[in-house]
Length: 175
Image (tube, rainbow, N blue to C red):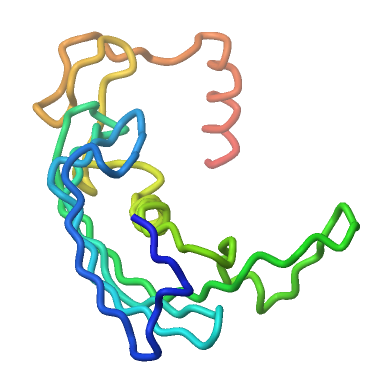
């Protein structure tokens, strides 16, 4: 979905849109959108400078990075964004940004890609590591058993026998 800037009226534009599964190109190896994505925002503008304030809501099924079990959780994000037209290249290959420009998004000056904006908000709200619960114990390194279901039956290793001398030295220094 695109918003054509020249078609905007002076008053704020209120947009509420529901993306059906598959419409937003969210691609992640261990996460899948499982509910429609709802976005609700208000766009205000002064000439070509845009301000967009709103929310994105959906639900995501993740694969836990510790125990590899799947779990679902709602995902909700609020945003307050500023967009400016992309500056024209001045012939210089590298452009340095000022600190205040780091909080600004850029668009082509003709139309704003709402789908891309919504996808960006979902990506930013997605955690870097997916954990089903804070106290998830993960999998046994030796046999792969889920330690959340109880202790594994494999023999606990004493450690590398080559480290025995260092462990003994450590015990003596603490006495």
